[in-house]
Image (cartoon, rainbow, N blue to C red; front, top):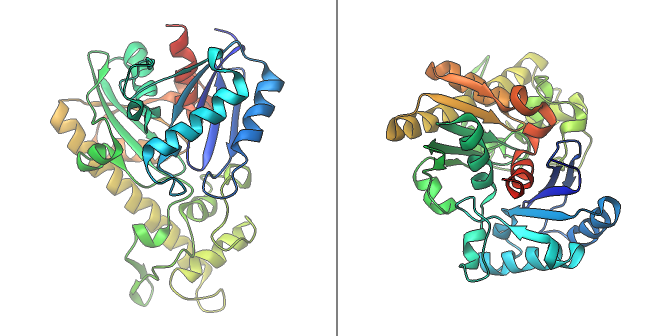
Length: 324
């Protein structure tokens, strides 16, 4: 393992990087749909790190700036190959294997979890690998060293192996139709007024430095700013709703997300006969609560590989796979 072998995980909102020795870990907020700086940032990384080998996984092809997934894959490949040189770059597909030129290019779509699953299967054995990131939650059954998940996001959504909710970017109105306040149940406004990042900032699960995405209103990332955004979820401002009630809304967000995650994990566990969870991502704390709710064994990727690696695990796994 060395710092000259790096993995890249290029998503629609974030691009993550890790070296195979774990000494280099980076996260860049680069939304592909909005005047993206991906080409420039990749070239800067190439010049600064001068890697010998680059392993790439991606999920950004689904961004709605592309007409279809193939167009997105080709764009991302062009950016990476231009920055590093195609001879240095290898791509990992949805089986967690390195792609050959003759393979269907669409196998590269949404394959970051497959790299993670292959490394986890090799080093931790049979389990459900759960990775809760900024935007989504992967719930991947691993049996006999290989994943048993659907090969596309569409298939995985149908099988509860993908829950489209994360620790930072999820619209709270998509999680909660109603919230319980002192005066009773209150319906929520289906606007992008607040996100999960606001709830977890208030609850102390993330700090301002971990709040890497944009805020819903373009304002700051202080706790007061987050409280304003949560108040708007019920069409209120800070003069109309008590601080205690805002914190209770944040707790209801967490409870609902843990419940949804546990429900999906339970379905995947029952279908595959698995009783152990390996947890990664910024939302490890949510996975731990879901595991406790289900009375399942919990293995923390943070404890095994380190907290920073856990947050960029697909990138780290991609780098490690080059050496396997």
